[in-house]
Amino acid sequence: MHSERNRALYRLCQADGQPQQAWHSGPSAGVHISLPDYYSPEMMGLLDPATADGRVIFFLPWQNCTIAGTTDTPCTVSDSPHPAEEDVKFILQEIKHYLSPEIVIRRGDVLSAWSGIRPLVTDPNKQDTQSIARNHIIEVSDSRLITIAGGKWTTYRQMSEEAIDTAIEVAGLQPKGPCRTSGLMLLGAYNWSPNLFIRLVQEFGVEPTVAKHLSCLYGDKCLDLIRLEPLSGHRWPVVGKRLHPNYPYLESEVRWACQEYACRAIDILARRTRLAFTNVHAAAEALPRVVAIMAEELGWSDEKCREELKHCKRYLQHEMGYNLKLVERRRHPINLSSEEVADLTKKFRSIDSDNKGFITLSDMERFFKDSDHRLEPHQIREIIDEVDLNRNGRIEISEFLQYMSATKSGFVGSSRFKHVLGDSSAANYKKPQQDARIPVDRSGGGL
Image (cartoon, rainbow, N blue to C red; front, side, top):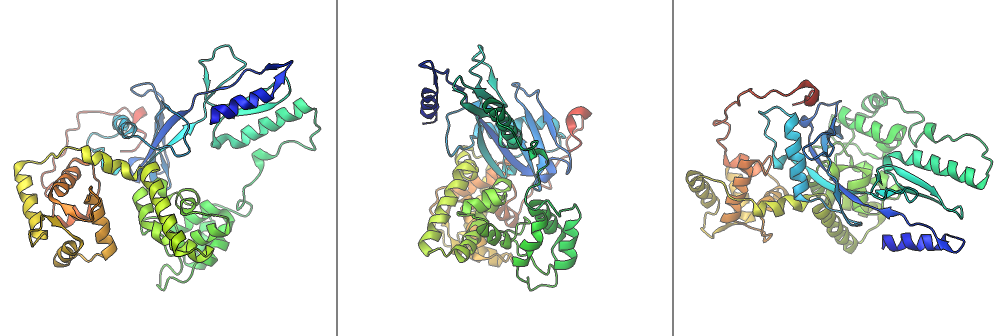
């Protein structure tokens, strides 16, 4: 589709009856992952162009987590690119070189994974068709058609400035003044200051972490947004109901986004907030509440709500890495000793008290009640969903053993289920020898 449009464009632009030379695109997929914030210093990132295969690797603090990347793989253009497990493994393998040897890099620490497509192009004016530009290119045809291709969204202002400057020159236009884009403030920047968040804390009773988030994201408009937030009913914070307890996004941000033309749940979770990028599982947990608020604001029917839930779940599963770990876990071999298998089988049967051969929701509710761990029914369903690879609403012994093996190997990160069952790994912990030394120039000052 895209190449056909490209050829059609150049057929329209002809000089002396001869079609212009066409551009050649070389789209490349780049995968990124998000990790817990302890993988990097709070205010410092690291970039290294000398990876094992010559690609660039970096990890940067962002939105209270760490972003690590990237890969560079030729691909076909897609409206819904998805990450590949081999790319996630490559990134995890590369960042091992920069961290202390006592830190275990776990697949279970990956909070989200996503892929983007770089619009790489070759310059039609250059003889070397193999040279691909990683920035943007502007070309003027013989019929004065101006084309800008390539580039990236982080340089959109420079791209637009150069494109307009080219148009002025080619068309002989007379600008009314110099370009102002480099100093043009975005909405919310005019009355913003780094200390604005303190006003949210002092005047409105907002948690400092939430206040900093609102100030940085909305600028001076955070003062208007926070007025949409009802009283919390607590002494502190006075206002500010979070969408997810571990992240600073508020319910009022959903209402604000609806006023600013957010149309779908994906708009909220992936674009207006970055929850889908920082933690795809947290985004899935916040999704029902996001849809409920949007239904109130936009007048959605029950059918529309179901459609949005299904649509956004599919996006999180395929494009943000939610399903990636589950698919790979099915292939993950069970690595347990005979003693561990016997012990876990005994624990499984203690939950499956009537020896059905599987664990149901009612079994889990009884188990957590007897263990003095108070969880809501939806939280117990979330735990079952973590273990239930077959997606039949119950936990079978093979799934149980596979899950516990994955937690042991680090393929699954923090587990509420494992915590309640009990774990002896801490007692068996041995401090690793500190023989390996990491050069200062490659450590980044972090782990």
